[in-house]
Length: 490
Image (cartoon, rainbow, N blue to C red; front, side, top):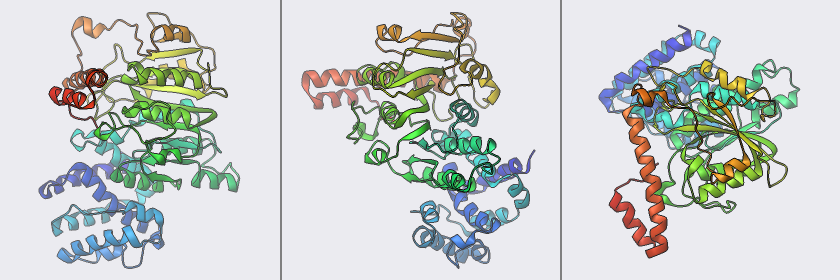
């Protein structure tokens, strides 16, 4: 066990201390972020970013009720008076969920006693990422929606091959996994940036990585994560599906896993530049992504199955994507890899064309789902699981190397644009016989089955609503949703 994994386990074990205070897992990680930030500023000799009198030593020197009162005041002060804008953003609207002085004392003492020398040797960023991963793997925390599994991120980054000098964007940044992995990929190939000129190094640290995150608690975890990895790019708190997203600079590379579900309240995105209005978040994000790529820019995007087959605006958006971009590869992901979701997902790889029409000639699909185990705690997903797909994908980030169609018995197949058009632009294509369904073994987890049923009901209800609007108006459509009893999916 490394020092980092040992510390992560010790930090995670502390969350059990907080159960008596009624604190959730996500609240715990957020709370720990505040305390870790103060401690890490001391350990990395960066306390000049903090106002005097509001540093780790000032917290440790107090005890009991006085310590808790000071801590509450410090959170408020750091969110409004800190000299660094990043520090202010991390502590913006920060409030402690701690109610008992003894619990704060336990946390402070435990953090002080950790092996910080070894943690710094191995990298504080890795320590913090380990904590975020631990939180995401705990289903009760609900944090899986902000965390894409590291092996999948590493696969997507290695195949898209971000380069020094390129703008790399994540419009649904979560806790920063894609941006940090892209930075790590570039640093590994440039001797930690030392192969680059001084101006190129400055660009990588301050401008190369950027994006938007909607949820404030996720945003503060993201800022902390980026800071510990030496990245100072602008990742703002905002809504990509509003005018905030319109202001993002066009990117050379977009890597992202947009949130699943429909826009809150069922409303449409407030974007004036979208051609196709839709309340489906993934379809709206997909429009943002392919419109926000520079000519020749490339993207790798995690999207659920409904994006591949949803009719109406979905069909139009897929056709527009394949016109404006070369959608060269789709990876059908196995089930169980997203802790908080039971939906089936895919990765779409595409390159923006220099023209607006006819860029997709063929689409290659790799089926990593059929006759694969359902991944989760029993069977963890690893980087090795993506090796066969990587070999089929090839070493060109835009899929331009020679590829071999493996036929109906293989996992990698090619479909022409004409074949897809005849299918009604439906990209939900499978061909392998599912042996698990034949044998009745290895059935999906109950929550996966339930989520699939809910997703099909959601799509059917949307189609009913659209029909009712045509026949009787919007009030009748709302009555359909109420009668079915489906909640809005967030």
